[in-house]
Structure formats: structure tokens, C-alpha cells
Length: 218
Length: 196
Image (cartoon, rainbow over all chains, first blue to last red):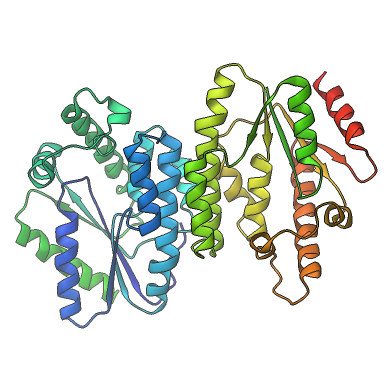
């Protein structure tokens, strides 16, 4: 991964589904804008055209581990080129809901070699700051179920751990992802804020805001 | 058995592949055989969403990956012999043509099995253009030189592509056949001997 040499700052949020990333990102965006920073946000799997293809493949259950990995890498590449790099060049603060660590964790859980995934994303700059919200799988599971009231096949890891009992698969899948996140973020060369996702929303928000301000001023 | 046939436009790939299919009953697999996925590729290209080299290559890789997983693997697993109309060499060349590092491209398709026989059909650029003419606007646009002379731009584009095909073939274990002075039947006989 290359070092960021751009004018802006890249801060990424990572953590398993239901850990609270997205809500915290929205709040941080509001705070930073209020402070006068120019901020742009982008979420995983949000390029309009590519997310349409991903939805089609999910509906038709057309994914295999490698096509899953590559199609999500297409979404990332497109947003990286069209949104992230131009914003960093303009000196903006870029907040991303998930970054390459999501692919490393999810795709390797599907059996793709980490070396393959790391090479696929080698063009991506190293983030200035990583916010990793570490939430126990059981807690995240209930949050997710409260919010969506259903479990989807791929996001439950049904393709990896079986579709007979999606609740069980979801927990196994996210335990595996969580372990891979821990491995990724044990590297000392990254500027990481690791937060316990069971703390109160306001406590977490306070820590994230302080970390983001420090990172931006670094 | 998986046979890969690669080479620049107009090198004679389609003719050879048709002969192989007719004679040996090989299944022919074009590299964009996963039609639903390829239709998105075409739409994105028309809408200018693939103008960036990295995004273009990633979508090309995506097209290839779906074809490989959904068409190639099931056929080989069921014991069919197949001939690929373009395979990983074409992917590497197209990536390199857009400035992507070769090692990046090679890693990206490393999930695909190496072909049992890899054939690169070569021809001079003059001959290729004489055989096929200058392709339509969409292909013309991928010429890397923006100038008013369509022939010159396309010539340079094909020359570079040809050089990259030959370099890659030399590095790997591909059989290179120059078809400039060979009839279609000569090419076919040569490949038939390889198969024996």
C-alpha cells in the first residue's frame, strides 16, 4: 500500500456489520463540517452501477468467492478513482465507511489468499487514520436484527457456513471476520483508534471526534 | 484440456478456433461468455464509466472471472476439452496497454488455471489491418494516441499490443505462430500436430 502524499486526510471506519460504524460516521461528518472542514463520505458497495451488478449477483446467487472479491474490488476502484483521490487532491477530509480491510477480512474468510487481496488493492493509499469499532458478535447480531429484521444470504456468510441456519452462519462468519480484523490492525505502522463497541454512543463519538481532529492536524 | 488462443485483432484466431471446434469437437469459450455480466461492462463503457485505466481493467477482470467460474470451470470439471478465444495473456496485455504493472495483472488472474496449450497467433500490423480493417469507433477509441490520423493511431496501438503479446509469449510457454505467410490450413495443421 502506498503512503498518502495528498493534501487531504483519509479516515476510514472498520468493524463488523452492526458495530455502529455508519451512525458514528454520520455524526463525525456533521461535527467536522460544523468545524469548517470540507468533508466527503463514501460507503462500501455504493457506486450506483457496480452496486446494481452486486445486487443482481446477490439475487441470483451468482457469486463464487473470487467473483465476490473482484466485483467488490471494482466498486472500490471506481469510488477510489472518482471520489477519494479527487477529494484528497482538493485537500478535503474523506470519511470512508469500510476500506480495503473489509475485503481482506471478508474475502479471506471466503478462502481467498490474503496475499492476492493485498496485491489487488496495492494502489490504495494508506489511510491517515483508522477507526476500528470492535463489538462482540452477539451484540452486533442483535443490533443488526433490530435494524433490518432479516438476515441476507451473503451478508450472513451463507455461502461459506451454509444457508440452513443463517443466524448461526452470521455469527460464525462475523467471528471469522472479527479475527481477521484483529490480525490486520495489530500492525504498529497504522494510526488506529480501536474502540470497544459496547461503550455508550456518546462516549464512542467523543473518542472518534478527538482522534479525527488529531489525525487531521497531524 | 484447456487450449488458449491469443493474439492481436486480425491474427487469425477466430478461423483457427472454428477449425479446432469443427474437427475436434472442442467447446469454444469467448472470454465474455457470462452474458449478464458482460452487458453491464458494455453499458459502462458506452457511458464513459470505464475511461479510467484501473476501473476499465477491474471490470475486464470481473468479466473474465465470471466467465471462468461460470463457464470454464464447469466445462473442464465435466471433462470437456475447451478452446478459449482469448485468455489470460489477453488480459495481461490489455492491462499493460493501459499502464497497469504486469505483476499486478498477473496476480489479478492467478486464480485461473494455466492453459494446457497456449497459442499466440502473430501477424504484422499491416497484414492485420489489411485483413480486418480499422475496427469501429469503440475499439478505435482505445488507441492511446489522440490524433486526427485514425490509421496511424490504430497502427501504433496494434504495434504496441503485438510487442506485448510477443514479450509475454516469450516469457511464458506459449507457442507463437506467425500467420503472415501461412494459409489457414497451414496454421490449423501446425496446431493439430501440437495437439498430437
